[in-house]
Length: 495
Image 1: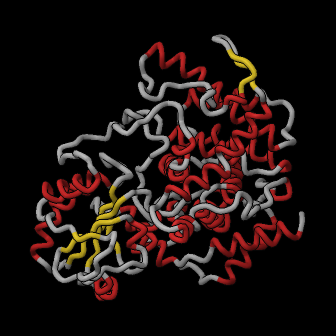
Image 2: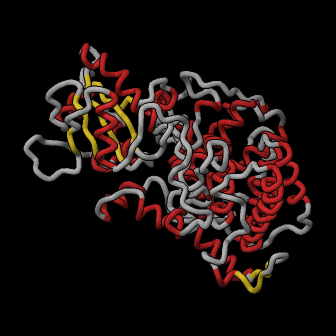
Image 3: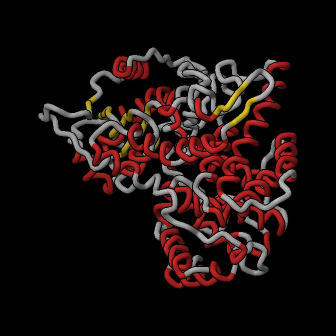
């Protein structure tokens, strides 16, 4: 194992321990709150508004002692339910937030926006609020005061006028009126960054809900997959979260007995959200179906696997293959899907030696799954009418990938397929995300995205046999044990 790998792993562990327990508690409270509008304060104001995938934000400044504010809250919540949280009717469009100016810690924040009365509502692109301000006499500002939002109806009408929509307070669970086509273009893939984060968090939540780590075998499978994410997840937030779980795993799951419940401390697996809890989830965008029960998580999980496959090196290819296969076999709760996937894993008899081979295996496996589901959905009528399963990529996206095709078979040019996949799930995904995530200057765009994505191999955790998960008392090997000891010496001892 090289010195470079040792130093890189050390840097990852140190980074994982840098966030304070206090800030993590605040973020958990945001995610767990029952209200739909997100409570912001001086500590989390910038980070929440920077990280939201929503195109617009509403910020309500209020005071908890104000009777008019208390009476206005039900009106504000009626609108917030349309846009915020996992059950949002129209997700990913408007982030509804509020700041309590009666809290002394928020005094400076409220002063920056010249809050003159309660409640006072502002509108604008989320990134414009980050380190931003508002002045009454300022002529040009993308942050606007909402001057007619005294009731839920009037507030929603004001929002509709701003974005050219016709949303209603009685709208029911979202049916995707924005579905474009089944031929995913390059611009659409830019939205997949959010979906990969969401699918990762949802997979982790499923493990917590089912208390799925039941033995040393499933524990080792879990750790191998988390190790893969810590090294190569395209989101820096998820890499950091995975590293925190690795560092603390022995305390969270002593002798393989995990504690799952969320609590006030840091002594359970549930208190280590793998991709953070900065904003409520429920924003599947690239993977959003035209029906409520289609696409979403399964699509996001496939994009996660593709994005991992194009980021590994040759020497990691078979580890990545076994980590993904074991993870699906142990933790994917759709039994028939799990068995089919496991059969395809078992059909691989020779260990992968090249990353290219693993990239193409994930791609061909995905197409085999699509072929099977195409027949089932056609006969049962259970598919998404706007997103029927197809063999991918279509010619419209990669004409050079096809040598020939007919109704019965396709002959692929695997070299072109590999180049397409590497670009589509690698640089293209990240660069387009950075271009489209915020509207503003190049500097603002970079600032808004630098914490989300990084270079393909910005941090490389050595994930070969030298870090074998099965080593007895230390879940991910002697090297990790060493760095974990170093990290414990740097941080306060948990109570």
